[in-house]
Image 1 (spheres, rainbow, N blue to C red):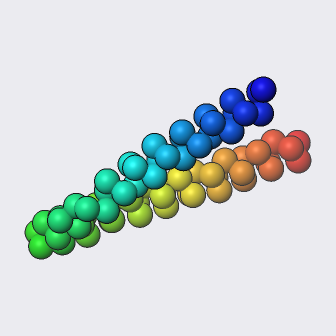
Image 2 (cartoon, rainbow, N blue to C red):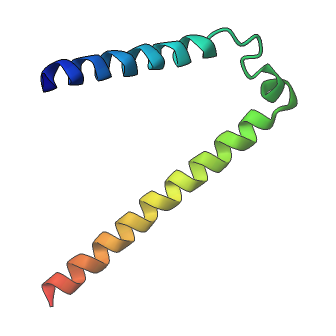
Length: 71
């Protein structure tokens, strides 16, 4: 009984997910406004800076943890 309920819940979730994904493919604007204004490069630069900042923070944190472990 529980397996049937899980199966139907999964089927409904996949059906709803499929509808959401299909609804997004019919957009006439694929970001051309951002590309035409050059704002896409600003967005990408901000994303790259954030990701690099996170990596640098993790590396610094790892070095501090290693230093504490050696003591």
